[in-house]
Length: 305
Ligand SMILES: C[S@@+](CC[C@H](N)C(=O)[O-])C[C@H]1O[C@@H](n2cnc3c(N)ncnc32)[C@H](O)[C@@H]1O
Image (cartoon, rainbow, N blue to C red; front, top):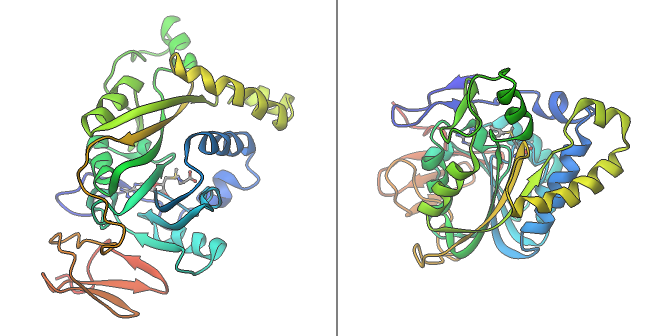
């Protein structure tokens, strides 16, 4: 389902009330994908850190990979998926659950030393704007692990060569194959990341073996082992359906702000808050944002007209 949260926001692919966990993952034959993504994360992400922002965390499928971080912020547009994440991970200061639109992210500048964004960019109609929001929340030298769906993959190239696919996998424009589902050319993504002052330090090519026949015929353990070897070929060029990148913030702005306020008001940008157990009140623009049983809701203010 698509939503237009505000006139200034691009459309959003809403997972509110969706069965993403049970209908896409659990018991749905995707152990290979889940396990290879964990292999990639362990290779790319520093094992320890202060605060990690998990962008589009969903139901927290991958959050147990971030055990070495003092705090994990799970940001997602879907309150229902965040509620499932909270049920899996529990309520504690280590996990901060934030329902928000990434395009209007409430996460303050420079407050994180790591971020991940897995299986999320493909829903971004304005990828540069979305990635700029992630970048803003990162301190100098922070590490950002970004996964994206690759339009220049082997299957698309072969189909294009035998004229079974009209659009060219070599064209750098993002391809919207279903509404709010985009495949990206690697160079397009690398250019956006570079323009945001990220240095791309490693590329892994994932899911070459994501073929129904192979998944049925070959034990998952073997597929994962072969995938783990093939992932390294990303260094020479990614032609796989899924690509993981490790990106390091190069510039010195914004400065690290680990001890400052975690949130900035999506309405006015101020960071002067009054918090009680039910709401955050912005002292600058007098907007109230709900805290619903441990989940911060920045999707729309309580006192909106
Ligand atoms: C395919 S799911 C991936 C979830 C999780 N990263 C995983 O791999 O299991 C995409 C997620 O992105 C979230 N999402 C999509 N657009 C968003 C936006 N504009 N702001 C915040 N989250 C968004 C959805 O709610 C959904 O949970």
